[in-house]
Image (tube, rainbow, N blue to C red; front, top):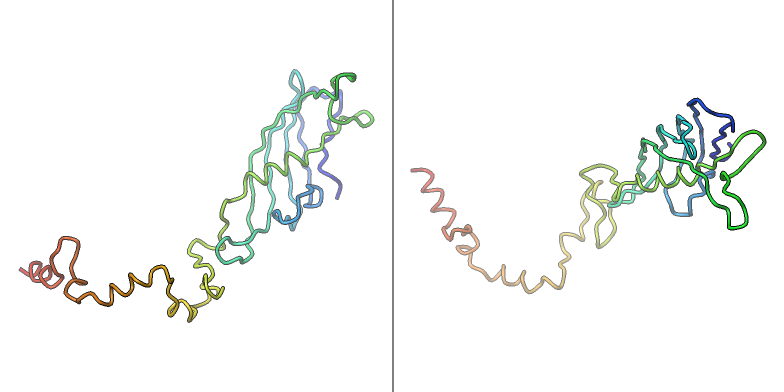
Amino acid sequence: MEPVILYIPRTTKEPFQRDIEFNGEALNLPHGEPIVPEPGEIQLTVEKIKDGFFLSGRLRVDIDLECSRCLAPVRYTINETVKHVLTRVSLGEESESEWSLFGGDDTEFNLAPLVRELILVSLPRKPLCRIDCRGLCPHCGFDLNTGSCECGKTTTDPRWASLADLIQDTPESVKERDYHGSTKEKNIEDAAR
């Protein structure tokens, strides 16, 4: 698969459409960034404007991420609207303003930076394998989605140990009081009347 290149004939005056497929390698994503396992597609309508071209359309690509709670693989689909203006750029003081690249009778635009940016800004902040993901045990690393671990029942954070001692020393009558200061038994009697 070739790079994400949009070819626009220099003589273009009427709007036209292009469908461009791309793979993850063409985007040159840094190591550790989202993985693009299958080819994605960008569908564009190209319109001539005064100082360049207006691109509009859709980007669709599947990416693989890790769940932020349990580290399980998550497939995420990006389906974004594309709106972008290509204009002339200055290549330095000595040269004239030119289009990004020229090739024969066509003007070539590398869309990889645009596609990469659209993907990165569309990523969820905290991808989840499912909404009710319970994550990993902070002590042993057991996946709590598959069951319960034993260490969570016996391990107490030492910073809270003195509070746990206070609860054990508190009489049952005080533990049973609600926030109004009355006991549960009295509230039940009042409700029965």
